[in-house]
Structure formats: structure tokens, C-alpha cells
Image (cartoon, rainbow, N blue to C red; front, top):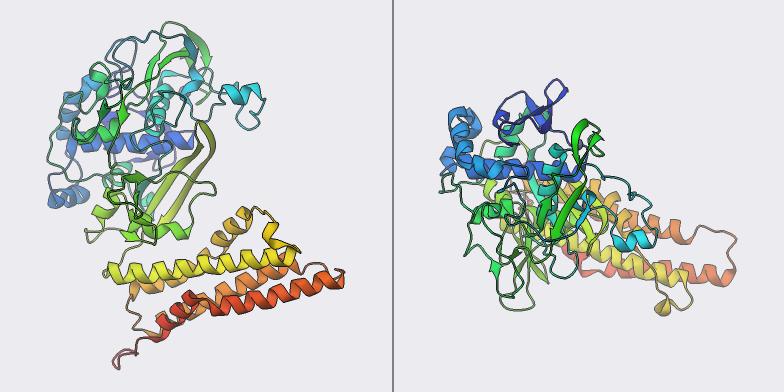
Length: 521
Ligand SMILES: [Zn+2]
């Protein structure tokens, strides 16, 4: 199957209809979005296509980028570039085959659902823990779905036992893609283009970019690592940590377990081997990174999916360079790069990741968040950081005094506060968005409305915390007196501690510190 000419990519059109297209059709303005039934495939397919645009028709500089954004990609250039890389885009039994081991793998066949990140593993099956994702899903997969399953597992590759290498960004990396807020107004190619970087290199067919074109650089020996220094930077889009060979000789006819389509040759088996490519020292252009401030020269680590997903406390680090007491945060290169352009539509970030517990997929998260930007980034970052730190401090005080209210010996009590935390960040988000909008327009807080927004933010937060305290603690009027007394004492202390917070004072001081210039009403 030639991925360039075969119609294998499911998409939706502007009128909402669905069909499958070939890669060479992607410039059609009628194509609205990719349409995979699985969210992780959807995120992977965007990255796959961004990688293709980046390898085939990347602009040489900002000017060319902006010109293509306005006028479109030249169809002839697109087709010619695809022809150059066509040998890397073949999928089937014949090698080289897309994202599969160049060398035949001497290994036992295993079930094809091993390609799916959430397929229950050996231990889960033994313990009968496959409640949500059943062992029988994904046992027969059509070749069209198998292509994206391969790309998804290679892109997210979680830890999987001795020598099973994680993805170029680690296991379950967080991806952040730029998307217009009004997505339906733009064709797919233009949305993808927002995530393409200016780059000097021209289309080339090289194993340093597409590693399946040559024998795998295996990693049995330590030190055999693939880095941006000994490979091409474009390999970031085509990482191949897993050595996989799909079995094209034993197939079955029937319906694909993933897309439901009828197919005469569904894939049912694959071969796997450990010690695939071990990546080191990469900065993937579509992921945000953090660097610990504790040690000198600490490595940059790609952010990963986390229990509970993302909340507004994470937004700043995803869109602007910033730092707190522990880490330096670096947004994805494409996010950082795009803030340089003017005259773009209102943008947001589509953030997604698998939250992995080693090989076990706990949850898939995705969020659409506003793109935080401001002319005066530094001052603005500082103010936003202070606001978020204040929210966090308020939450800490709440947690401490909930414990005091609930237990006679709070120091010994062990409580899982994750429900309180997740609810807090979700439920205070609307108020945060209001103050964020005000500060993006007026980071110096020259206008009275901006200062009022800060004051309202503090008031809202205070009210929220008190409400949660009362709802969680003072819910039973029949409580014995001694317990009631303990609860009321905890509430007084909570109030006192909250009012004493230094960060609260900082936020209120920010609301006062500027004098309103006379010409501003
Ligand atoms: Zn399928």
C-alpha cells in the first residue's frame, strides 16, 4: 500500500460528510478535519501530517511561512516532494515498510492489539482487571487503521519491560498543537500549517529522517543512542523506539475492530523485539519541556500526561517561557515560534496525552486552552505566576484546615485530596479566565477595570474556599458539641491563615500599586 496514493485517511468535509483520502489530496480546502474513531489516533494523525508538511514543503523563513498561510501550498511542489519521499511511505510485507523493522524479527507472533496503548497487558489479564478496555477489542485491525496504530505507538511509546524503549519524548508525552479558536472556519491544511516551522532543509529520502529505511540502530549496548547530533532533526516526527513487524501472511476476513469496515485481509498478529532505537537529548517541536533548577545542567524533560489532566495552573508554562521555584518551563517550539507572527486569527492550544503508569494506560486527556500571549511577556508572566501561586496557597490552607476539622489528631490522618484539588482547579477556572483576559490587555494594570479584576479574583477565591469548607465540614447540624467546636475553631483558623497569606497581600498590592494616569478614564 502506497500511503501517498491509497485512500486510507478518514476525514470530514465542510458539509460534515465523511470519506477516506490519500495524503496527496490533503490540500483540498473542503477537508475540515481528520476523523478517527480513537482520540489517540486523531492526535497522532495530526502529528503525522504536520511531520509530512515539515519534511516536504517547510518554508525557508517567516516571510514564506506567512505567504503560504495567505495563499496556500503550491500543489505541484507538494506532489513533487511527496514523490521524493514515496519509498518511505510504503506499508506492507515488502521492506522497507513504514515504521516497521527493516530487518526481519526473529520472535514469536503475538496479538495485533499489542499496538494499542490501552490494550490490557499480561498482568492485567491475569488479575482480571480489564474492566473498561476489554481483552477482546482490537484483535483484528484493517491495514488502514494499522498504519495509524503503528504511528501512535511509536510516537507515545510507554515503558514496556526490559529493553522496550520509550518514545523520543519519553512515555506518554504531552503534545500541544496550535489551533484556531474558530476551527470550523479553516481547512485542515491551514490548521496543520500553524504547526510547521521555518527550516532550511529540502525534502530528502534518508534513514537519518525515516529510520525504517535502514537496519535499526539497536540499543543492546549502552551508549548506542540516537541523538539530534547523529541523526536528522526531522527524525523527531518519525521516531521508531519499537521494533515491530506486522504479520501480513496470516490474515482474516471480517470487520475491523477499530473502524468497523469490512476487509478481506485484517491483520491479527505482529512480532515485537526489544532494544529498538534509544533516543536521547531531543527537543520535540510539538511538546513543552521543563528543566529542574535544582542541579546545574539538568536535562530538559518533555511534559507527560498526569492524573487529573491539565488545569489553568499549567497554562502559563505551555504557552510562555517561565519559571517557578523548582523548574524552568519551555513551551513547545512551534508555540513559542508562532507568537512572533502578527495578523493571525485568535488561537488556542489543543493539548493531549496518555497518562501512563509505566506500561499501564490510566487515562487519555485532552484540553483546549487559550493561548496566553502578551506584548510585555516578562512582567505579564510574573503577575500571572503570582496569581496562580496564590490560588495554590489558598488551596493548601483549605486542605490543612479541612484536616483539622475532620480529625481529632489531624497530623496522623492520611487523606487523598485529589477530588478537592481537581474540583478546585476546574471550578475556579472561569474566574481565572476573567482576570487573565484583563491582564493580557493591560499587564501594567493601568486601567481601573484591570485592578478591579484582581480584587474580584481574590474575592471569588476566598468565597469559593469558604464554601467548600462549609459544605465539607459543617454539613451535619446534629454533630456532637465537641466536634462542632473543633470544626468552628478550624474555620476561624482557616480564615485567619488565609487572610495572612503573603501571596494574597501581593495580589491585592498589585491591584493598588499603579496610579491611574490622568488621560485614561
Ligand atoms: Zn479499520
